[in-house]
Length: 328
Image 1 (cartoon, rainbow, N blue to C red):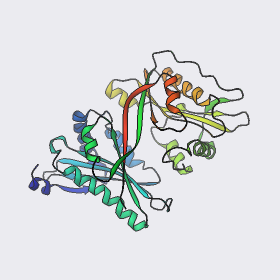
Image 2: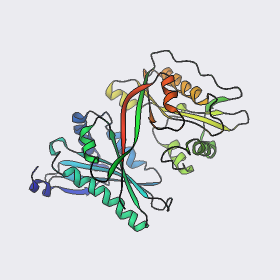
Image 3: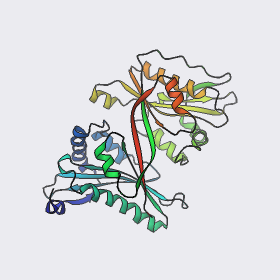
C-alpha cells in the first residue's frame, strides 16, 4: 500500500445495524487467512449492539476506501471512567486489517487510534490509562501488531480440551453438600459467592448485581448449565457454568460445549467441590450430545486450576497472550 493509498482511507465510527453485514463479511475474510477460529457471526454482532453490557462502553471504528471497502477495524472496550477512580482507566482493543492491506502501517494507525481514545477519556477523568490486547501465541501477524514499544506480555492463558466420548468419573460431593441449578431470585447471594471465589485472581474486578442480571437475561444464557454447590446451612459454596453455542456448532459441524466458569468460595476449598462441579458440568454437556468440552484457564491461577483440569482429562489446545501498555 502506498502512502497515497493509505491517506485516502478514511475512518468513522460504526453506530448502527446497517454496518453489521459488511463487518461480519470482513471478519470472515480475515479468518480465511488467519485461521484463528474465533470469528463472530452476524447474529453475535447484532446481540452485542442490542444488549450492551454494563460497566463500560464498546466502540467499533471502521477504516474504508473511497469506494466504501472495509479495510480496517478496531473493536475497543473502555471501562466506565466513574468506576474505581483511584485505578487506571482500562481499555481492551482488537485490531483487524484486511489481508490485502496488511504490512503498510495501517495497523499502527489503528492501534494509535485505540490508545488515543483511552488516553482522552482518562485525561477527562483525571486518571492514568492502560490499554490491553490479546492474541493466540502462534498468531505471528497479530503478535507483531502488539509487540511494539511500550507493550509487554503480562499474562498467558490456555484453552484446554477434553473428549466427552471418553469415560467421565462420577462427581463425588463432600458430605453435607448438594448441587442444583441456580435461579434469578438468589442473584445477590450468587454475586457475593462469585466475588469471594475470585478475589485472589489476577485483574479481579468485583461483579455487581447489575452484571449478574445482565448475564441472566442475555439471549444466549442457558440456565440448564448454571449450577451451584450448596452447603448444609444453605450457603452457596461453589458454582459451575457451561454453554453450548448451537449456531457455531451447526456452522462448523461440531459438537462442542464449554465450561465457562468454575469457582469455590473461600472457606470451602480443598474439599473436592470444584472437581465435583466440573465433572457434573461435563456430564451435562455429554448428556446434551456434545463430543468435546473446552475451557479457559490462567496459567498462573493461584488455586492450582491447571492441575485440577489435567486430572479430569483436559489437555492444552492453544495458548493466548495478553499485552499491556501504560498510556500515562
